[in-house]
Amino acid sequence: MARAYNKTKRASKERETHQRIIDAAQELYCSVGPAATTISAVALRASVQRLTVYRHFPAETDLMAGVVKHFASENPMPDPNDWRNDVAPENWPIAILSMLYSYYSEKALLWSALLSDRDKLPELAGLLANFDQQLLTMQHDILSHLPAIRQRSVLCQSVVHHAVQFSTWRSLSENGLDTVEIAALMEDWIQKCPLG
Image (cartoon, rainbow, N blue to C red; front, side):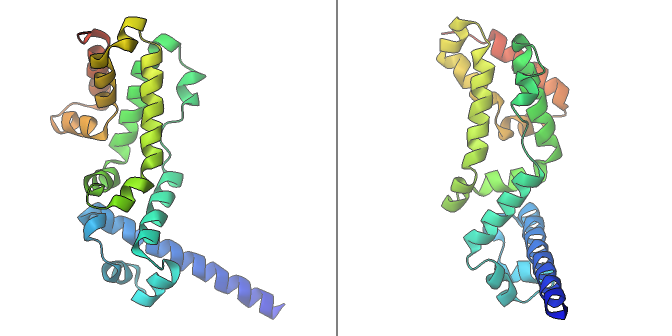
């Protein structure tokens, strides 16, 4: 019994250390970005030795993957079922944009850091592939309930693509607009942009 208790206690402590390392790395990502985050800095912030970090995450890419996976599981993007099941199809564009911008406003700090460094870190681009796919789903759902002529319009497709980007929300937010105003503005643009 004592051996089983000690084994359970040791496993619990390992999980706690593992999470502390992830939390430390995420905090550093938010403050200096993934590209500038070092294992030494993570170890210092997590109050562990560098070797402890490497024991849990043998490569820096493993740590980055751990942070992205944990963040995604704790902070999921809007679920398509939220509009597919509960919103009239003609209102999907404004509903999707409202949900997405609300999500961006709540999670802006880490998303800003991750997206600003994705071009510097090729492995980060791979880790964000699921995020990209979710945005594509939103684009598809917005376009699918527009008039057919708008669905086929390259300009309209480009506006929809632009509308779901974090950078679009951030730019308008930094100019003093709130999420409701940004969603209404972008939805109006989608509905009224030229079709050329």
